Length: 470
Ligand code: FAD
Ligand code: SF4
Image (cartoon, rainbow, N blue to C red):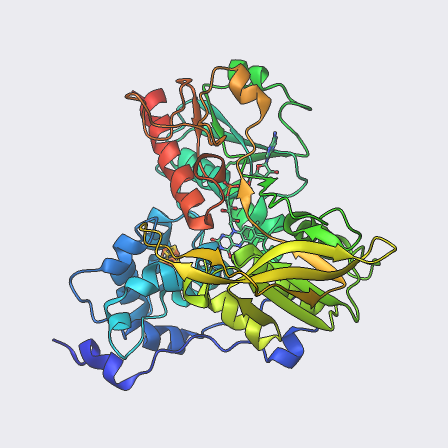
């Protein structure tokens, strides 16, 4: 064993420094700072090469984590970037937005001790940023064009990952998106303080350099017929996401001052992309904001409301902190930025004043009972109802798939929930009931994670290649 095997005894886990709270809440810049070469190398040396890399298993794209940590230790950044891209077409993005505490870092052997996990996500991010800055680009010199062509609908992480893999197999990839910029929720949903939009633009350059063609501002079903794409291409990948909000049917949801999470976040991002000085439809200065829901989207609403000048932001969640669905890191950042959490409160009703404006949310306390499926179930506690005063309420109860009509009309089977059914009855992984139509990401899984959409896109491209190049 080398001395480095015991590095974790001497070197503490360190994440890159974050921007001080007083500064970060004044704007929308990314709050996580960068590792430098030395810090990344030293942190990578904390990996004990345990022989059972659970981190790889827990990473949805099964990154070769210990192998690239070794390259980082040796300062071989370009090779590390190449290895990262073998499994993950968007490593700098996953390094930023993955809930590492629930994935790779949560499974790190050191995390099970008092020493703390290797900072896998921050290293992945730093290596890719640095390699791209130094000019790293995928080497496609050995790729032979096959003459096959695939249309991809949706430039979110699923579609982008699919495009990357198809180009590496010599298959033309044309990506259609109704938005004017690529990224899907990476660009329009996830706020810039988590993911700077310049990072997505750099990835666009990389993909275009690989020969991916983006046809933006093209909504399939409106500007382009789906049937036309089936005629024009050898196969189609559908990565259209999940955009139907879960409606908790709360009485009072029509009141002035009640917003749904996604339109609120999208409107804010679009304004920032265009011109931050344009007056905002959501001016929260001096307002008491209540966010309903404890997922990652709820955390993004909390932190955006703080930046919009809210006098207070209260996040109401019906389970306890241990049972929150999102990343612990985002809860920590929300708290640091001034968000107050009210756990075990079930919203019952939104109350308005005589002018139809929000004035409060009526909630009831909950007790958590064993549901038998490993997740605590909240049960309302009678007689504990009370009101939380509010000027603005943001509902963030999650999203359901929103399958376009043209999928069904072309014989693509859906599940009852609206998710696109793939890989059934002997079909290839990610192949739908139509042999030339493949799907992945949120429209197959329901609202999930970037890294799982990346996995689906990558694997779907593999299935498409095996169909077209057999
Ligand atoms: P999307 O990213 O939704 O992309 C779908 C694309 O399809 C869009 O660009 C859309 O314009 C396009 N499209 C749809 N219909 C058509 C059509 N008919 N024609 C042309 N184009 C079409 N995940 C994390 O891992 N970490 C996070 O921190 C995180 N934060 C989140 C914050 C918010 C506010 C939200 C809403 C989600 C967050 N997620 C996070 C989840 C993550 O963003 C999604 O799981 C992921 O983006 C899904 O990828 P996708 O490619 O399936 O779909
Ligand atoms: Fe961890 Fe996500 Fe990177 Fe996998 S892709 S190693 S889960 S940060």
